[in-house]
Image 1 (cartoon, rainbow, N blue to C red):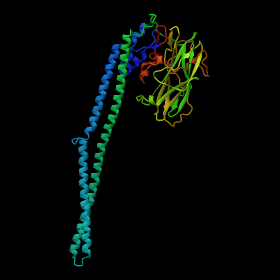
Image 2 (cartoon, rainbow, N blue to C red):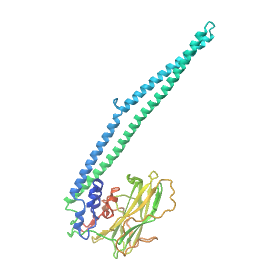
Image 3 (spheres, rainbow, N blue to C red):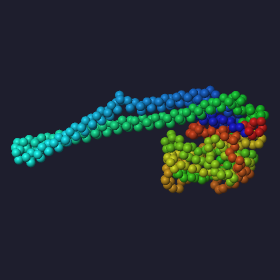
Length: 435
C-alpha cells in the first residue's frame, strides 16, 4: 500500500505560505481523479512556498544577529545608558569621599572642643570659636550625607536602567533564536515537500500508477464513522484521561482493512504558542500495550470489519503538569483498503475540542467534548450512542502500526487551517499488491 502525500504537501505549503490554502481542497475527488490532482499544490506553488520559507529563515537569522549586536552595544563606552551609569557611579564615589571627609572634620572639631574644655588656661573666646567650628562641621557632614544618599540612588537607577536594557536585549536574542529555529523547521518542511513532489512527478505522478492503468481514486465513505466517547470538555494538566474511539462500518459490505486515525493539537490560551510537546495521545487494543499516537502513523488496522460492525479502541490523553492553561483538539478519522484495491474513508476529520485547565484546578463535573465538524449529509447515518462495542467482524491487528501509513503528516496548527477535508490521505493500488 502506498500513501499519496496530498496532506503532507498541503500542510508544508500552509505553514510557509498560507495563501496556498486557497488551492487546497479535500483529498477526495468528486468521482474524478483529475479534479483531485488539479487542486493540490503544484510544483510551482511549492517552489514559491520554499522560496518564501528561505526568505523567512534568512530574515530570522538577521534578526538574531541584530539582537546580539544590540546587546553588545550596551558594553560600548559611547552607549548613552552606559555613559549615564558610569557618570552616576563617579558622582556617587565623589559624594562618598566628601561625606567621609566631612565626618572626619566633625571628629576633629569635637576633639578640639573636648581639649579646650579640659585646658584651664583656655579662654572663653577659644572655647566659643571651637564650638562654632564643631556646629559648622556637623552641618557640612549632614549635607554631605544627604548628597551621598541622592548620588547613590541615581547610581542605582542608572545601573538598573542599563541592566534592564541588557536583560531585554538578551530576551530578544532568545526569542529571535526560537523564531529562527521555527523558521528553519518550516524551511526544511517546505524543502522536503517540494523534493517529494518533484520525486513523485519524476515517478510519473501519483495517479495512473496502479499497475492496471485504470487510475481509480479512493472515494469518500460517510458511512464509515469515527466517534470519540468519554473525552471531557475540560482536562486538567498533570492528569491522564481515558476515553474511547468507536469505529463503525455503517456500509453494507465488509471492509478488509480499516485504519483508525487520531491526532491531538494544543496551544496556550492565546492560541499562538504550540504546546503539542506537553500533550500526549496513546491508544491500545486488547492485544497490544499502550502506544503513542504521533502525527505520522495510523493505528493498527481493524481487519476485517464486517458490515454494521463496531470496534472500540481504548485511548488516553496525558497532559504534562507544566502545561499552561489553554485549548486542545483531538482529531479522528478512518479509512479503508480492500483486497481488491478499493479504498476510501471518512470524508471529514472530526475535531473534539477541549479546554486545558492549569495543574491543580478543579473544574468539577464537565460535559464530554463533542465533534466540531459538520455531520455527513447521509440522513441514514447518525452519531453512535453510548455503551460498549466489541470489534464484531474484525479485530485490531497486533503487528504494529503499518509502515505503509507512515507518510501521513500534520504540522501543528496547519491542520486546523487547512480544514478537515484536506486531511484524508488517499491510497492507490500498485501492481495489485500492498507495498
